[in-house]
Image (cartoon, rainbow, N blue to C red; front, side, top):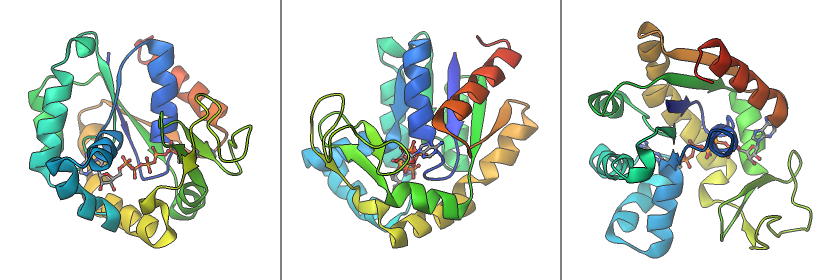
Length: 213
Ligand code: AP5
């Protein structure tokens, strides 16, 4: 099964894609996580991407497309995968199409004020990248990851000004993909408001209604 999780920053793409990945035993390919790993490892690619990420802009297509093309060629993607954060513009969508048809695009929708609250309160583990929220899904011990005990930190691009810029970038560059996939009849909208469990249930119902699980 090949799935895309599409939606604005902070809609819960990573949270839901990680849950689905565990439930369906499919690899989750999160381009944001891959880029942050390049940045923290100090690679040339990371150095080039960092400036764009800090400003809430899209990293150039030639970087991202090659990264995704390489990742989906791995053996663990033979039975399918879940794309989280890709595609984000028309050029990326066309590239993906050339790699083969997707089964479903799950469009998680949420408004600007909701995503600002979610992202400003988000904390992530430095070691295993697990994601928390100070109010909505707090860790058991202050500042520590429940899963590995690693330190939690706030992403640099989760400051309010950058979040609003990311939202603007999303509206201009990524939102047109909603119509694009709607026209191909492979898009299902899932309301991004509600608890993490409620949204997860809606996604599973959507997959069932499409005969995918
Ligand atoms: P990326 O890391 O992909 O960021 P994003 O798309 O902006 O998405 P986020 O990870 O911020 O949000 P999310 O929807 O996954 O929400 P989450 O589940 O964490 O990209 C970062 C940057 O990399 C981009 O700006 C760009 O520069 C670059 N980049 C990446 N991909 C690229 C591409 N394809 N092309 C070009 N550039 C690219 O949830 C958010 C918070 O809310 C968490 O704290 C969570 O606990 C909480 N939460 C989740 N669900 C709920 C709920 N239902 N109720 C309450 N709280 C919730």
